[in-house]
Image (cartoon, rainbow, N blue to C red; front, side, top):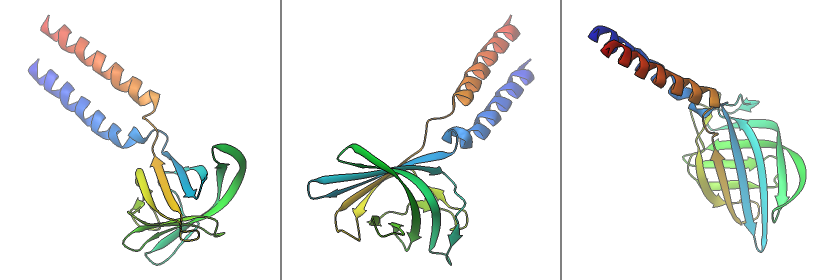
Length: 170
């Protein structure tokens, strides 16, 4: 009986540990770039896989994501969608530049981990300056909550475990 309980607990622990990497939900991060220039606040929002496949990458310092669909707003008023080519650099600090030269972020922490061929974005808030305008720029990378199926599976596993242990004690 004790062997069964130990086996159940170890298998439950293994399932929960293996489920931890899946806690990013669908693996898509939301990026919100905000820039303050004088009295105007411009904002771009887009989504990208947490671990994207770059269109091209340099020799250990940069990678490019092409044709990223983004929503643009000015002072909170949605204007029009855009298609962006985004370059990410890592020269000891993080740097994001729009290939068209419309916006950028430099002087902040590293935005991703891993190699440029297989980067993984790091969730967080990054503040720096826009190299094109000199304005204050902020990039927020947020990961979604865990998927509902994972939460449901964890709850059902817990309930089954309690019922199993109670049945063994009777």
